[in-house]
Image (cartoon, rainbow, N blue to C red; front, side, top):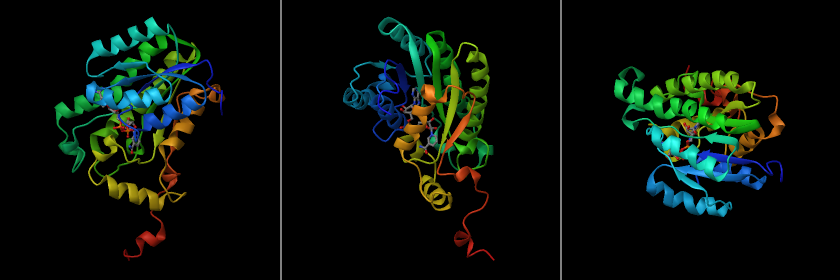
Length: 266
Ligand code: NAD
């Protein structure tokens, strides 16, 4: 795949550390010749992201908290000053109060519902609009979602509702930007052990359940998600837009656990 992204420049949002899904994506893009810029949320994350970015040959780091629209604007002003144009965007950002990522969805508070939607869903729309304004034809954007958007997963709660809205946004944005030859897709990743993933109650149980019951009998690595992102962000997928592409060892096709899992139920 070396050289696939040669001459392309893109922004990766959502690296917190070397376990982040965005990091798996960044590595694949850099291996294929892309030039990368990174955003980070606050100075503590900045200190972790800086050496990671440097290891991929990038010194282009911009602070961004998506709850602050001025900081989102500054990201795109900085890109315009340094690069002028953009070829691709990775949005791997989500947040919800972990006290509501357990128990019943019905108990979600108004405050956390709004905050979760703004950070985990609306931020993609706000960023995609700014990115599209400076994106070259043939450009591509990818966001990250999870199967809890369409099927009920224990404890995923308000994040599932936000992911459903995010996936719908992907389809509307694909239509908005399609005639400019800009594509918009989502990757629906299986469970991965990350900071964000650890916020969901009983994450370990869900991880192990999906591991045992997916067709491939395992979970996915950030490198595997990165490979799919590389495909969606490169010209290899030039006819693909508005899609939600699963990278979950096939778990989304399964309706029942493997029979061995059910031996106690009779
Ligand atoms: P992560 O904790 O490594 O990344 C989450 C990122 O969101 C962090 O970099 C964090 O700084 C950023 N973020 C949160 N609030 C922000 C804000 N206000 N402003 C700017 N950035 C903010 O975890 P991850 O699992 O790699 O998450 C990346 C994406 O992948 C998320 O959208 C997540 O929902 C999605 N996803 C994760 C899994 C999983 O099992 N880990 C599965 C499917 C989808």
